[in-house]
Length: 103
Image 1 (cartoon, one colour):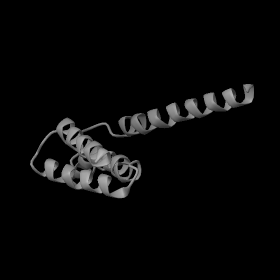
Image 2: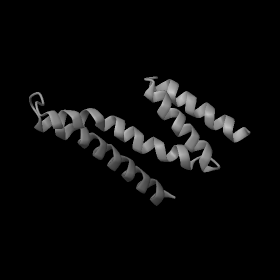
Image 3: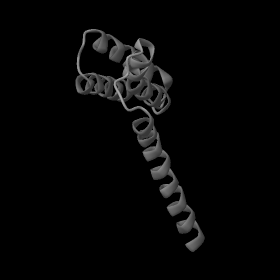
């Protein structure tokens, strides 16, 4: 029991260090504004790609069957295409999955 608690604390501390280093290292080495178009474009899209990579597989894999998640994913893509915000898109996807599961 005590060993498991010790390991969990080490894992949490390691996660804190890694997360903070990802944020601190760029600020320490990049002093001025970023003028490179490629780097600026890359940094602009990183949050969206990260959110997509974490969200899309779970939409399909956490439902009892694959098809409600796929339908919700397609509905979310359509809603995002019409420039709805993050909350409306998430709400639409959640409602669609819920309705398809209870049917």
